[in-house]
Amino acid sequence: MFPFVIRPGYKTKELLIEFRLASGDDEMILALKEALAKVNAELVEKLDLWQNDEIIYRMKSDCGEFDISSNNYGSIFVLAPHNQAAITKIGLALASSPSFEEVLVVLYGHELFRGRNFR
Image: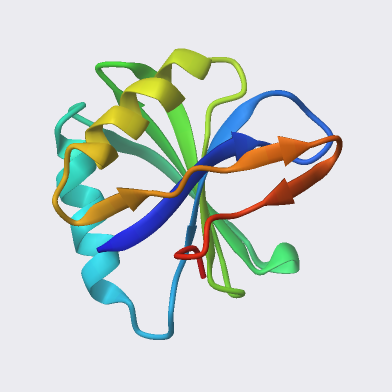
């Protein structure tokens, strides 16, 4: 199972979904595509931000628009700052998948403590 967390973004209260990839984790990408099929997600645009070592995939779906940000440091984020309902619906789709496990987080002040299964 691939762990994920739903948490506030840095310096904001808006939620995002975070994944950590191990080297060569192609199975996780395939599982993510399958989970996003539950909300009929489709790629609208791919932006290669080489100066940030980041690729942003602009998506549309039954739950509205959202972005997937992937970087060279092993992190993938699902972001929807103007559509927080999409984060909830995508989180439910991930949680219902046998390939993913939601790791609950507890926020204390400004510190984030991740569950022990989150890489």
